[in-house]
Each structure stands twice: as C-alpha cells, then as structure tokens.
Image (cartoon, rainbow, N blue to C red; front, side):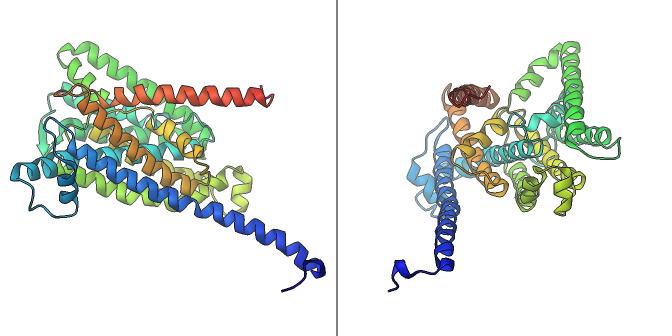
Length: 369
C-alpha cells in the first residue's frame, strides 16, 4: 500500500475528483431504485383497481389473471376483469401518465412551475368539439366499440385548436414560448366561452355536456384502450428522447443555438406531440385538472431534476395517482361514482396549496421576497 503522505500532487488532485464523481454516480444510480419502486406501486395499484367495483374480486384472483393463470377464475370474473375493469384501469393509467408527462414538458418549456397542459388551450378545444357533437345528437357510438361522437368530436376539436394556436404563434415567423402561451390562453378563453354559449342555448344537452366535462373512465372499452395505448406508447418515448433538448433550452435561445438546439423547431415538435396526447386523453376521459400541475412538483420532491428522468418519473407517478383517484371515485359513493375531475381537484388542490405554503415559508427563512 502507498503511504498517503507520499502521494504526488497529481494524485492528491485526482483523489477528490474521483470521490466527487463516485458520489455523483451514486446519486444518479438512485434514480433506478426509485423507478423500480414506482413500477411496483403501479402494479399493485392497478391490481387493487381491478378488485374494486360494484362486486369485489379477491386480490389473488386478479393477480392470477395478470399472470395468465385463469383456471381458478369463473367466467364472470374473467369477463369483469378483462372487459370492464382492466380497460378502465389501463385507460386511467395511460391518461394519468400522459397528463403528468405533458405537464412536466410544459413547465420545462415555459420555464414556469405554474404551467400545465391547459396553457395550450387543447383541453378547452376538445371539450368544445365534444359539446358540439352532443348538441347535434351524435353522442351515440359511430364506429367500433365505444367510439362515440363525443370521442371523435373531442379529437377533432383538439386538433383544430392546436392548428389555431400554431398558426397564431408562427405568424411572426418564429415559434417562441411567449407567443405560444398568449395564443393558448386566448384560444382557451374563446373555446370556454363557446361551450358556455352552447350550454345556454341547449338546456336539454347541458347536463350531458357538463357531466362529460367533469371526467370519467366508465366509458373505457378494449378497443379505445388499445388506441390510447398505441398513441401514448409511441409519443411519450419520443418526448423522452428529445427531453434533454429542453434542458438546453433553459439556457436561452442563443446559448441553445450555439449548442445545436433550434428553439423554434424543438418547441414545434414538443408542443405538437403534447397536443396529440392531450387530444386523446380528453377524448377518453374528459377534462381532468391538476394532474399535470402537481405531479412534476412531487417528482422534484424526490430530487429528480434532469428533464429525461423527471419526465419518466412523472409518467409513473401520474399513472399511480390517477389509478388511485379512480379507485376512490368509483368506491366512495358506490354503486355510483364520483367524477374523476372532481376527485383529482379535491386531492390535488390542497396538496398544491401545501407545496406553495412550504415554498413561501422556506423563502421567508432565507430572506427571499
């Protein structure tokens, strides 16, 4: 063994650097245990969600269904799990994960911790499209199983809204965060006003429009779940791949460009993907608030800050949160169910206020005004 007193200057310099690099590697590796824990919690939450409903199914039978051992299950239990509860659970999982991912992206892109999916106006546009189809009497199934007029109208409304926001934001020739934010807020206000006008002029459809807007997963079907799975399964990984560019954008337009990241092109791609995700989320569940706002803050509480990792953990955490909220929504007033949008607001709003109060207290202790 070498004597520490006989170390060269180079060795003395490299030793602290190696220790620092090792500590940094350990902090980075801590992400994977957290991700594994989130995956286990998500599996357990999904299994419990499939147990709960108007008729309870034992946990071990649900797990047996998950792993393919259905010999101990009756035909009715297989039908309930496979055709009703599993599609609903997967839909809530995908919607929660997608909303949280979009919220994480919005906060990173706009560099604003208060940003959420609603800043693009897509949710309001989807709601308007669904409201128009309901008023016109096309709320029944149009194609396949569960693809109602409201579902199709919501997707069409979201895409029209995105085109409007994109056109206005690009009118100056550059696609930047300020013009996008202003355009999104303005379009959202217009869409919300039009929904109010529709509900005022068509009282007979007001209740259906209002209940649809509150959000529910009760209309989930196997076919709709597969479509949502395909959309989320393709677009969220794309966001994960380009997430490091958003970290670069935080440095500013000029610095980002010097590092090879074009702000306008990156914003266009990210917001386009986010808009499509929001369109299918709203079409499947209605408008659900607070998920995209609070989940990224919860993830930061676990000391995950780099955008790619934060995005992945936001998806997992949002999925768990939505599955749990849906469990509560469908059991608290059983055999009926509470609107999922109301449930997320009841849980999310107080939690967000607690985070806000804590941040202000911390800032006060540090003398920040």
